[in-house]
Length: 358
Image 1 (cartoon, rainbow, N blue to C red):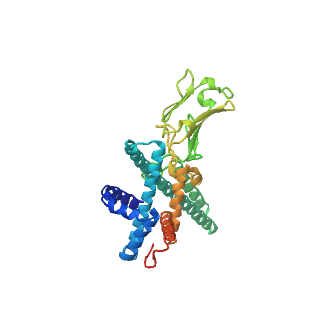
Image 2 (tube, one colour; image 1 turned 120 degrees about the vertical axis):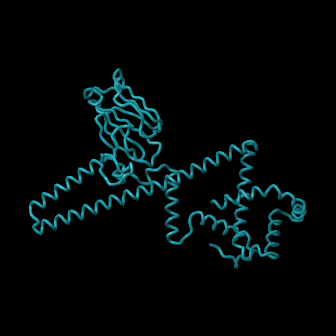
Image 3 (cartoon, rainbow, N blue to C red; image 1 turned 90 degrees about the vertical axis):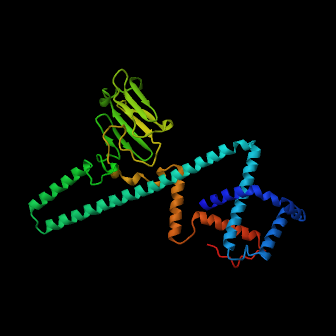
């Protein structure tokens, strides 16, 4: 947590000056038969002679003690690992830089996970509102027909419905943001004169027919094709001819999981795995007709679509939200309570009756 991280920084700054007590502490330590007996004497002194563990700041002091023990445990494990791996102190800065980078990536992942959850909820809410509106219009139409509204009213209603559907097909919405512009998706993708495409959150699939390639059905062979897919560009065509597709992809793809195949010697199917698997694509190639991503069906956008780390982050967020709504401790708070309970079990001689814990 941020509190623990801030405490560690302060603790590390103070560690340098603590060696001035080494002399008297070593004398006390040598008077005990073991290190743990020495620690028990220290805790007993604090319990008897100070308000450290039974005064008004007892709860805060217990938290500091737990943080201290956690820090010392991490320091031991780190030193032991470095010793076994032969890591010198010169590698410390590189290790800290790597840790900062990892923390930054974790923060970005959390932001993406929150954005994913928010967008998915918005899509479901909009679709539900649209379904309710459509149902209300149909009920109104049925009531008017039953009341003898006349044939002309029915024709007018149908005409207005057709106009509304046509507006939706063209992506004519009142929203001004980019996501609300573009054509209505077909299988979450679209159709152009050169290819058709569909998508899930993880990948896009591009289908090019023999006719679009300028070949006859049953004549499509790999030796005739010129296909080059890079992280951000793609070229597809027949050797010796102008490429059918050439330019920048809408977003970056993972080359190791991107492939193309020929089906029935009549069409080329290209599978592009997305780098960002929490975003719907508006198009395949930059400059091609874009779809309205607000109208993409959300059924495919579930936790199973996310990579392992991101899914774990989302599940943790959902768990913490449920716990908070029920007035129960979050996962981080549970970890602290477990550590405190373990400490209390290990030190039955200490009186915790006057302490208040959250």
